[in-house]
Amino acid sequence: MKRWILLLSFLGIILSIVSNTLSQVIIEESVDIPNSVVERDTTDDELGKLTVLSKTTASTADVPLPEGGSVMVTIVGGAAAAKHDLYLLSPIEQLIVQDANANHGYTWASPEFPEGTTLQFALYWYAWHGQSGWNYGAYAQQVDDSTYMMYFEDIGISPMYVDLIVEVRIAVSCDIVFTIEIPGPKEVWPDLPPGSGGNPGDRHKKTNIVVTLKKNLKPVEGQNITTRVSMLLPSGGHDHTNHPSGNLLGELYEIHSGIRGIPEITAPSIADGTINITYTAPEFSGVMELTASTNICDQDLIAKDRVTVRVPGLVLLPDRPPYYTKVGGTCSHHGPSDMGIPVLCKTPDNNHYGTSAVNDNIWFIAIEWYLNFPQEYTLFINDVSLPYGGLFDKYGNWQPPHNAHRIGKSADIRTEFPWEREGVPIRSPRKSLDKKHIIGNRRFERICRRWGSEPDIHGEYGTIEEHYHLEFQ
Image 1 (cartoon, helix red, strand yellow):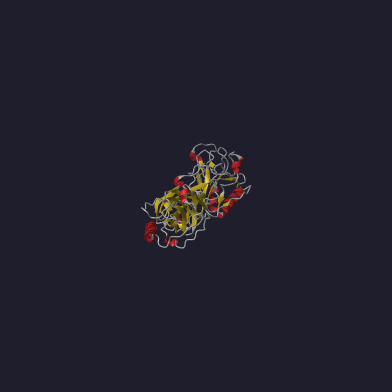
Image 2: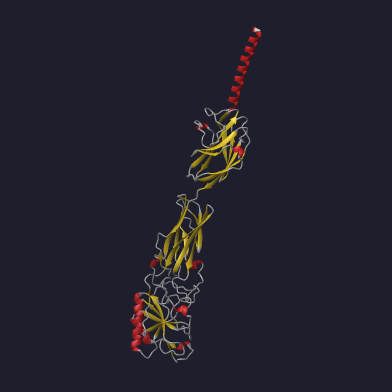
């Protein structure tokens, strides 16, 4: 009997040694994370309750956010014996989902993170042979600019990194600042031909435009930006609605790329996020609208500013009956008229703007004519200049015949209609259709020269267009 007792005791000792050895072998082969094994109460479902002192030893799947933003995390799939909780460990600690493999399709939206952030994800496994711990390994694979796939291996037995598969989609932070500014003058002269008497050296007909693009407060380089110029109508005295096109709008020139054109150019932004444009005004005056546009972060961006093209200092010729009558208004350039145009086209007066000195001299000419030749018809003052000056397209087609009348120093003057011609200019005999019978009124010409102008007969023979053109000094 004693021998049987001794034999059984010996067998018990042998079984205990074998059991302990097998247990040690299983743990050593299954867990290869130093100091990372932590007991977990698997019945505790309260989120955020887990305390892990050694999480810094976990292998993480890292997703960089160089531009900042938020992410959408989706549990795609996975297969493992253990249960898994997916955590965000950095820059904040957040339990994303508990028992992830039982929640395929689950999504989690993160808060917004600043630029330069790196998100670190890790897997905590448990309910496997009574043990638990951080994942054996993990990595993130970039799919495209906004998508990463994360693969986790929990315990490390025949690692295939398919124990949990997670998709991370990045929503890039896109705080955009897009502006157009005119640091140069916001009012410029029109482009004037040589000898017109104004704007010497072209120094006043150009201005500078700066378009700036910033994303998340940082300049955006290499972004194509389009800048376009258009004319607002009515403006500058142009009451017609047909818009000018092509070089009638001036010129845009981007100084870094050397790109020039009209009515628009497209140029890339430089390192400070800007394009820098020189705008040269056209021959016409008016309000020019500058529109910058681009597309970034799937946003169509538009910024606008305005430049006024005008000859400064022009004022409206006052009404001064009975010394003269203002005429010449049309529906293309409103003003008083003797041609039966609609009442709405007679106001405001947009065709009688001159310098103060010229306006005074026109009055003095009219007074002297009226006082010295009361038997003659009152002078009709036709076109002077538009309110903003520039090319005066008489017929509303953005073309001459007026080559003068740009800076408030030209005026057209006549008296009565053809067939009644007695004064300015003279037709002799009165009803002659022969151009050689049109002669200058020497008395009128002497008055004009006395008040600083050089008179010349202009206009189509035998029509109301016959008139004296006065060019003042």
